[in-house]
Length: 100
Length: 100
Length: 100
Length: 100
Image 1 (cartoon, one colour):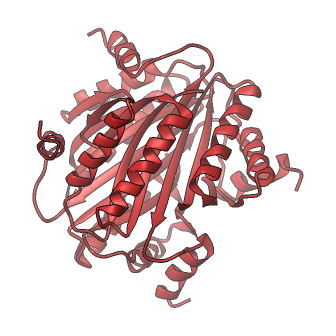
Image 2 (cartoon, rainbow over the protein chains, first blue to last red):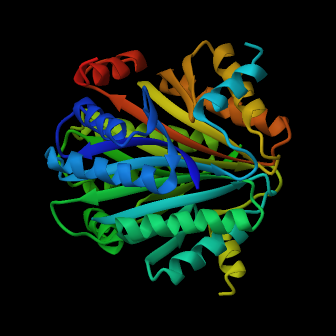
Image 3 (tube, chains in turn brown, green, purple, red):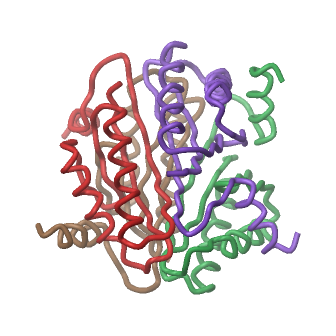
């Protein structure tokens, strides 16, 4: 099952700067060979359900290893059976309706 | 890795009533032997990372089989390495601070 | 506009225990006279859009005053025009489908 | 209070294509004069708390007027008191840690 996911990892109990942990998760996704896009409030990633969630689990493991005793992650998951769709196509679909 | 998850499944393109799909996902969790609690805006579930996310995948499969061409699911994921904690303990911890 | 909201407040940069902050937000909701229900992974609240979001803003103010330099909050918002519905009715609707 | 928000609006009971509704919400944000960025799984927006949530309320009103009887919206809200920060700076902060 193909999935489009958007997630935000929040390490708890390690200070106010989160970017080193986000950077570490970006590396996990790259190492997993998953297509992904960083934005201001999270990261979008697309791929097979099992591969994507294995990478998110790996991300939790890495962030714990970096010293975070607690992690809260927010994940949006989209699947569809009517047609295949990439993240790029989702953005394009909105832009077309906006006439741009 | 032990995980506490809270999720909301939203089938898209199948009408305004979502409760039959939520009920189907509750059954998936029960069949998987995972401890879970329904609340007004989602379902809490606790267990091993791989088991919990396999159940969520199964839930997506079941909801698609029920006729939903598209699903958007919101998942909150919590892990911690400092101590084990159940969902019941999380609620109790807040209630203690509230003096009730 | 009537709204049902479910939210989770995560103070960042203040240590691993979040329950004192959650308890403070519960008090904000009680003081605002809003019907609300604590569960393991968040709090459900129902009321008029403006009153609910004013309370959530107040919650952020209080948690900052308690010493959190940064807060990340996850909010699910539901509105409907087909019929009025309470949080209690949402749970009951699923339970009916589950035959319980 | 300055806020960075990321939101995803999901109209329920209106078919499988969501992009016309997303486009309508983008227009609401533009008309409100709020800085915002569309991505594959939502929209980031920054501004004063009250202005941002008034725009999100307006977005719900518009999507209901377009025919959606029910809407579920997911919102991530970030506030901080330690320093001002824009969405562009959040992305840059991660990129710096990634050495790019």
